[in-house]
Image (cartoon, rainbow, N blue to C red; front, side, top):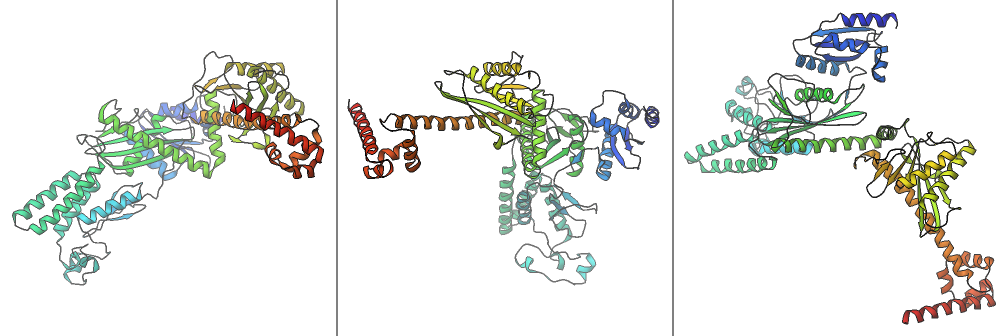
Length: 610
């Protein structure tokens, strides 16, 4: 242990046992990591244990030169401060947010007769922001609804009282089209305009029921005053808003206001999806990707995402639904895991969305960074099969025969989770008679790896055989005979239930049907089957062709080669006329061929008529 490490251990031991936020700095003064803690002393001291730390954490600890901290009143305050510091400094070892920063918002600026418009990258200027909206089309539809219900100005004029009183402005085209009531010339009062803005805010917050009640009261007042034409205009707005409201309902309207979070992850990232529910309607949805840097736990990642999303989406809901309890407590907020009922349905809806978000991000990664995509899949496969190393180089074997005739076996090679077709190999089985998958597998495994050993070629990091325990046992016997038992992991995959058989394990392994590990193994098995069956069909076809022509008296191998080279197939030879055949092989051989196929056709005709 070096002197600096001893100094850091003693410094950590002297920290207060209070909630707070700590920062690790390197020798250049850059922040490596920001973390929160219930007890600064115990949490920071845990980094300087001699054993038990994950490799990534150990690598970070070696770079720590100084520790700084801030004491706060509660764990929730620590989480908020940690969130702000991470966004401000973006330390190397903290999680990296990867959601789209350019999602649009709806802005109501702090100005006289405020506008309502879409914008990106909100700033702290006193304006009110609603969003972000992941679907731009939904946001545009909402803005169009608002403009149909409550005409608001779209101009950028300074509509202060003094400017209006001085009569500096004139009505524009929007007024004549009925899209604005011209507050710029005093045709609409500030009080009426602000009442409309208040109702717009209710719609943006999801409280459409309040706006419906407001419009109904307005309509009743107009009807009572015999202003039936204006009342009819309000009725149309009511119908428009009711249609919008009914489309948004996803659960029983009795469900109170609640935030719903769901979680999914993979070895590299965590994904969180958020639904904001108001009176049973989904009024907002948002998704967040967090790139893992250390060995973060799901509870910590979900807690960070909740704090980030609540701040970003301006949520102050007092109820939160989650799939599991996060490492988080918020004053006055009840966090629970629903088990049944409408709350459970809401969580399932969010979970469906988070898995779709995860799949979309993986597809993007596959397109933009195929190497990283392959590495992630192979790391998952290594973990699922408990392999000693990442299987960058894999081989898969499959046997093909029909009732033991023309047995062949195929070997396909995958590198970095992708086919390497130039390395595929066929094996014509030499020593096996009859349909014996066991003996065929034993022969081809022995031949394949005896060849690799004699060439001094690298060995695969995983062998996959198509079949269950018998085929796996045959492969192991061949590897044992070559002195390779234990040096190459081997598994078998049985088609019926997609069971994975592992040597010396009496029970099969069942991988998740949707897992990328199983999909990769299936892809290898299917590719080996395709490659093998194609070769088997070609070989059987050549054999059938050869046997038909060899049955013709007086026709030898050279004549057969001439006929096939010129005419291409037995069918074309059968259809050829006497002159064409005579020109190719002479009159005598042509007569023999015509007599043979004529007699064969006559025989078939008699059988068919029997």
